[in-house]
Image (cartoon, rainbow, N blue to C red; front, side, top):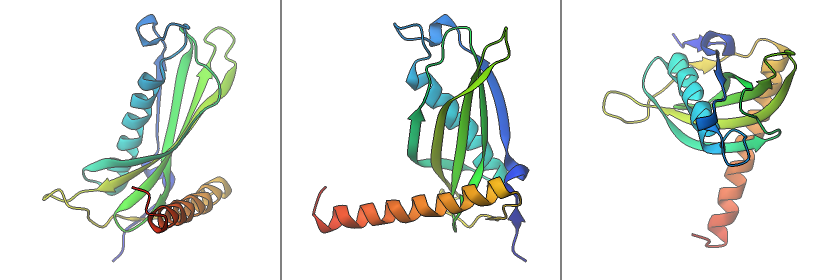
Length: 163
């Protein structure tokens, strides 16, 4: 029997507050700190989805949309967008929240690919993803487009002999 899970089965949400030691010389959240938070929440989703060890295979897209300042609250929401045989795309949405007004603004979006590993550290099959809501179905279809685009780009690079 094939196992199927929904995006909400493995979704994770977490929060951080930006402290001075998280900031760059402009007083905004250092990109590397945010990238580590994104990777951490994404691996939690991947592990929950596949029920085993999962490792980051790639960061397919990372868009910094708005700066996040010292004192802002950072809300990270992540869920599985798409699954293949042993890999999965995890989408992460990052918002910044003003703790005094409650105003929330989308600050960053990211798409990461993870691979599930068996006991021998080899890729292994994972549960299929069954999107339920219109938003989940849109994310699933968009992930397929990203996968196809990545394959086409790799093919073009190989054809041109670019290392």
